[in-house]
Length: 266
Length: 321
Image (cartoon, rainbow over all chains, first blue to last red; front, side, top):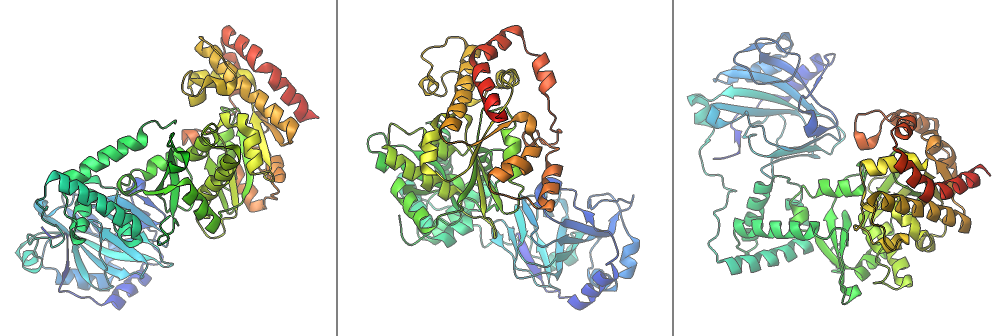
């Protein structure tokens, strides 16, 4: 299963920016996942739960356009191109300095017949979006499928807003023809077959390597998802010619945690 | 230290002491990119940082000498002021408010500093003083542009090693914060801290030989801390602050003592922030003196009277003079 894919659909970023100008007087609603972020993470609902809602909640049985969509011809043009059932359509903004901590959106998933598409409207080079601990660089006007049931995090380290058009759709044949959902994820490595002792020794060598190479540490330091961390450590160990198993990583984590917490007062 | 990589962004989290060869002791460093420490205690900050598995598996390790070398290269923010206190007396609020001043970084009861302070018998005095400076320097690195004020709130029991800390930082102004003994003891027995549970810290630290009664033990420990504050004030005067002077003393006497003239913006910010007790999240901070004294059983009052009151009264005398 892939977790990201850029669709062969590119939209007119200028037209989408013009929509933003038309919406400039609207009050952006803070995101409801307040525990997940610092700074400004807010949005506008262009299509939402049919029952109406004054929040950014994107789950419902039935959806309806909101009056805001009427003043957004750029967004309408995007939606008209998508030949699949539309669910929620929102503009989501992460302000300068904003941070969305790593989390999973468990309600989203291909296995539920749903997919989330992102079309960046405005962004900057200091936005970093990590999905499964690997960066996704998205340019304005591009269309991305992202499996956000997987751990993801965002930092807007720039001085300008990052605003994406976020479209939830139902999966149908049209979409399946464009997104190879079930293809193998090229980043998921096959666990190496290696004996316990050798795995342990290789992991120790890898730890020494990480201590000496800030960039390598940088690739591993920010995830808070334990299982993802284990997988990433195995993957990067292998990439550096040091095969070890997930089990070796889990054991080392447990031993180190115990050592750190033991005898705290000494 | 491996000369290739710096320790920029790393915090010394813990010292693993080697009793056979003290210089072989290992400092383990954890990664932190937060611009400030906003938690009530640095330990809480560390706990949060340990949610990143990389801080479990990929810590950096150095010797004590390498810690010193690093701080020699990257000295950190010079300390602006120190807080000593008897515990349960508003010290967390005081530290939190100082942290809201412009360009402020607060180290609240930093574990690795306490570890060095209590490592006395392992290290010679000179070495201990040097390493204490290095540890404060490593924890007190500027984490954001414009960070130029560093406040350290020590553990309550560190007041007994005031002379050591003073030797390491002879120029740094300090305050000693305390509170009515009954109020402190009620709070200490209601929710015990590390120092008021017999056996967690060595009783000898407080000059206690044997004290079978746990409540009396707590009162004696606290009394020793009051007395240590008084004694320190006699040697190298600091500023004595009573709980009742909070929160206003923060942007008043304490700031002035630390050489700070708060801007109107800062005063407004601190005043707004003082309505909250940082240890209890959203609960408003209230001077709960009356309630605490009323709820005190007679036996507890007697303990406070015997072990804490004498030093407290002398502190109050010294404060009003």
